[in-house]
Length: 174
Image (cartoon, rainbow, N blue to C red; front, side):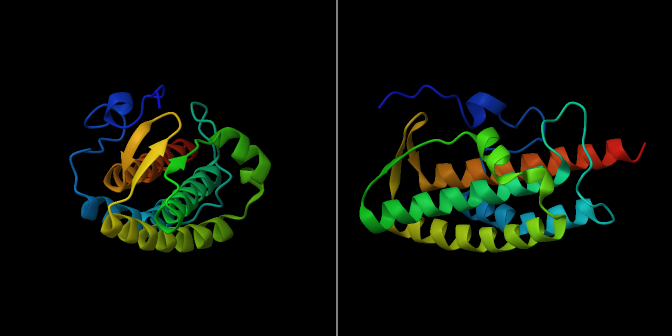
């Protein structure tokens, strides 16, 4: 398997050059960050309807909530599939095609936040089980990924998008 896609600290920097995420965190710390995502997004978006946008970003605020939800669900499913079936190969996905197919901008913010809560819970359950079983995935474009790698990547994705949504909210206030 050939790794062709940069990801993690090689892509974003360590710490992340934009949001400041520290890639040296433990799996437990990554899981705590993911568990906090629903409340962090809710806090940032309090008083907003989610349709707000920033000219430098591709999605609306609710779009970022939907993306984080989908990303957590996809990874939870892939970890569970590998753990339960022994099939360790996982494919990538096109986040923009998924956003288009799911019509992110048409999702009510309250529904998106509700879905994020359940996705985070399922993700935590799947990651805990994957860590306990020592599952190692073979990602189609990223190569070998431990569950600790996945946990950190997903914690960064969610944290980075909380940062994006803060930018959107700050921009929309002016």
